[in-house]
Length: 151
Picture (cartoon, rainbow, N blue to C red):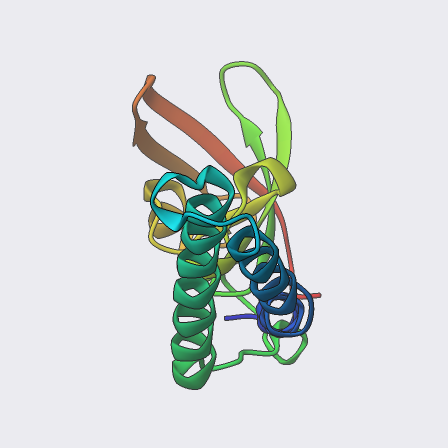
């Protein structure tokens, strides 16, 4: 994963441990004060939230412990993990820019493309000026690689 992706996951983990976990514990304690737990919706909601928070903490800890952080600024050349690639749709002339990142940090709305996605797999190894054909759920798409940056 990229350094930025690692930092974001680490920040989420710290927030879960220092803010979310104590808030859930407090909510459970307050709900217990209301009496009968078998029909206490607040208690059950708080316990469900606690389960989610603890599960996410374990998931993040596992991801971070196994993560290999790649610094894209040390890379150059053809498209590879960490590259920021500007593409032009050969049919519509629409220009888009994506950074190829790890699964856990992917967010297509922010231009962070999962390295395992069909588009990213097609881009790996390509140079500026190359054309890429990708089969998408909406049909076959053709892109031209306009720029490759490692930032």
